[in-house]
Length: 129
Ligand SMILES: [Zn+2]
Ligand SMILES: [Zn+2]
Image 1 (cartoon, rainbow, N blue to C red):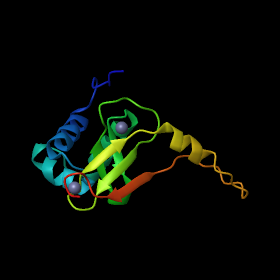
Image 2 (cartoon, protein in one colour):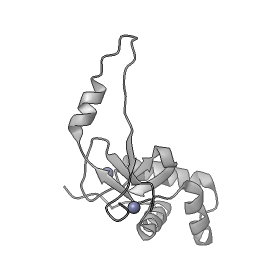
Image 3 (cartoon, rainbow, N blue to C red):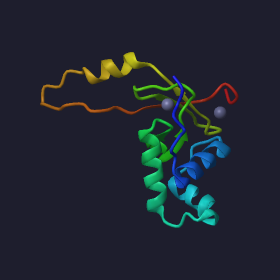
Image 4 (tube, helix red, strand yellow):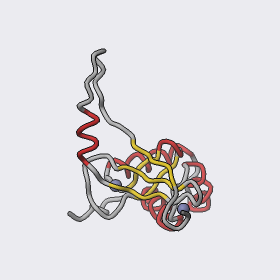
C-alpha cells in the first residue's frame, strides 16, 4: 500500500524533509533549530507537526531517545520494533505483529489494560560489530 503524502501542511513537509536529510533520529529541538530560518518559530509548531505526521504513519517516536525517525517504506498498523546501534546511532525499524499481539495478551491480574507497547532494542549494527 502506498503512503499518503498528500495534504501535508508546510510545517509537516519541512519536518519530514529535515528528517529525510538527517538520516538519523532527531529531537524536537534539533528540528526546531534546523527549521528556524524557514519560518518555524515555536516548539509547539514542531510538536504539532510531529504528532500529525505520526498519526499519518510517516514518522515514529523513539521513546528512549526522545527523538523522531522516518517510518520505513511499508505501511503498517502495528507498532514497529526499533534496533538501535549504541555506537553509530543507526536506527532500523522492524515489523513483527506477532510480538505485539503476544504482549497485548500478557495476563494481568491487577486489572491493567495494555494499550500500546514500545520495543527498542540496543546493540551494534552490522557496520559496528
Ligand atoms: Zn513504520
Ligand atoms: Zn552502528
